[in-house]
Image (cartoon, rainbow, N blue to C red; front, side):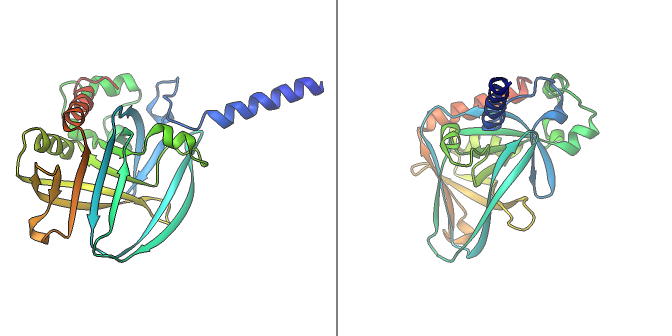
Amino acid sequence: MKIIKNTFMTLLFITFGCSHNLFTKPSSGLIKDYAEVIFDNHKYYYIEELPIKFNLELEFLDSQSETTSQTDHQLLGKQFVSTSKSFYRNSSSQINNLSIGKISILIDSVCIDKLNIKTLRELNDHLKNRNLNALNIRFVFDSSIDELVSSSNKNLFGTQCIVFSYNELIIFNNSIKNKESNINLTLNIANQDLQSNIYNLSPKKYNSYIETENKFVNNKNKGTFHFKIKANIANFTNSLEETLKKIKEGRL
């Protein structure tokens, strides 16, 4: 009996110790069984995770002083358990560098309900030749899977993310690929609020792309903030186009 009990406890530990480390698709295929995350009071379903297989770092500078709250999310079943921390920044040259290893695809739960989409198959059918904006899709650029696995908290998400809408990701990709200097791009930097345990999105607007530096700037703000890509640009644009193609073809 003792041997059986020990075996059972070992299996239980393996199950709960390993199953929540990274994203996995539920075997049921039901959208409601996917992991959930909150951005600006909107609940999203974590539908897909696409690894980045080349070195990619995103650098952004913001001169605004702010108190930032961040939370690591740990996935337990379908719920996130959060560990929060906060810090104060006050610098005219505060530069953050994010090492990106995956693109996560999120779908707005409100849109899913309005369209009466119940399963992943129904979602993929809707994506084909439909208005993709109706789903309020979000693309989250986040830490590498290996980095998250090796972290002590075994989190699904890192503490800070870059978030694009579907249209914004298209503009972002076209700006890089076509070397467009005059643009109108908005991206969001996501941080966790310490009190509400919700990701707050901080929008950043850029009106110019400097192709020689792979850098987005806003000339109206006299260079007080920028967004820079550190990667092989050809590999990066190919990855973005493949991501957009998977969405348009309904291959989630």
